[in-house]
Amino acid sequence: MSTAGIYRDGGFLASDRCRWDIPLILSLAVLTGLRILSLSFSQTDLFFDEAQYWAWAQEPAFGYFSKPPLIAWSIWSTTSLCGDGEACVRLSSPLFHAGSAIFLFLAARELFDARTGFWSAIVFATLPGISFSSNIVSTDVPLLFFWSAALYFGIRLIQDRNWSFALLLAVAIGLGALSKYAMLYFYLCAAIWFAVEPRGRWLLKDWKGAALIAIPLLFLAPNIGWNLQHGLVTFSHTADNAGIGGIPVHPVNMLEFILAQCGVFGPVLFPMLIWIAIRAIRQASGEETKLLLSFSIPIVLLVTVLAFLSRAHANWAATAFPAATILVVATMLMRKRMALFAATLAVNAIAFVALTVGPVVADQGLIPGKTDPYARMLGWRQLGEETRKVLSQHEYGTIVTDDRQLVTELLYYLGKSDVPIRAWRRPGPPHDHFELTRPFSGADAEPVLLVTLRGARNRVDDHFETVREIKTVTIPAGPKSKRRVTFEALENFKGIADEE
Image: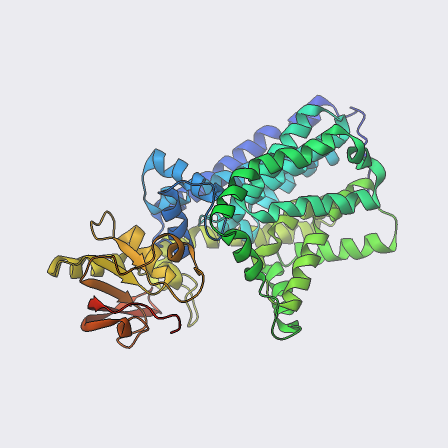
């Protein structure tokens, strides 16, 4: 593959470098506008992770139980501008994705040319995984933005050895780490690139390289301090989430993860990425190929191994796909694999339409099959309404739930309630953010309203002398699913034993 990018000598004509700018901005504006319009008309409620992030945003801090703080800061920013509606809670996602695409355009333009940059940005902006995550608010979205920015600033730093790009790269890494600790994979990828390509090794003995370690640590310092004050809960949760242990190997989990990448990245792009990687092992590759493979394949391999040893969600390899998109698009264009390229655009277009329209008609039962992919995002608003009805019939001192998703959904959909919402604390250390920050205790006012999905015989009843079932309601979670919610009045708390 051509080495015109990293060793670029300024030979690109200004007109060639700029003539794709306006088409890109217009294309991204249309994509982003349609996504924001979809959010405005979406019929989906907040998924419980989204509701949890919103709850975090009500109390801005330098850390939270399971994630670094930037997701909460993002939600605080958008809801401060346009309110607490679901669309505003999710608004940052399509905006971050548009920004990621712009940085990939700039990165690919530096490595190859503006045409490759344009199509890399368009392909990335319409990846199935990107179209899906544009409908929700999640930590992966800002992570991908800062990763894409870091990729571009890193390329410019290698080209120009300029302090300004070193500082921008350091800031991008620091903010990315405050989005999700997976940003630290960037150092692993850089180390692998240094091992296979000497072009950037000067950083290892330059003050700019030291700054790339020190400045991100400064960004992370408040989060580290918060964790030290709270028993390192985020770091412990992140380690526990990998769940290595039990059965030594899990080949089925690994296969499921690999197949999921064909869904997230695409059924054409992911196999082609693997083909490019295998081909690079068998024969010499250009500097661009080495760079982009170094910032993609190690992440895929690492998470695949994790899936084999334990488990891995499809999105855990998300940071591989900015560099992978540029590499696969450049390969298809330079080798004139236009049929594959057209198939990629077709798959992405179908995914974009389906995932943009899907939330708008999520409650209509139009998706074929027995299961409903939107079931986990429907019915929560009605839960808030049912709880409000119960509260109107009797005076309660506290609301308690024994399920994290109910805590988060009630915090959001119950609205401004004078009755505090508490999480039932299980034995041992806190299992989630609300067991840490708002656990039920004997000091909470009675009577207690218990909201549970576990029915009349649940793990909370035995800790109260008086238990009275109020009602059990069946709440539709879309046309094909439902959940049974039980309301109980509890009084005379007896305490919580060490074991349940």
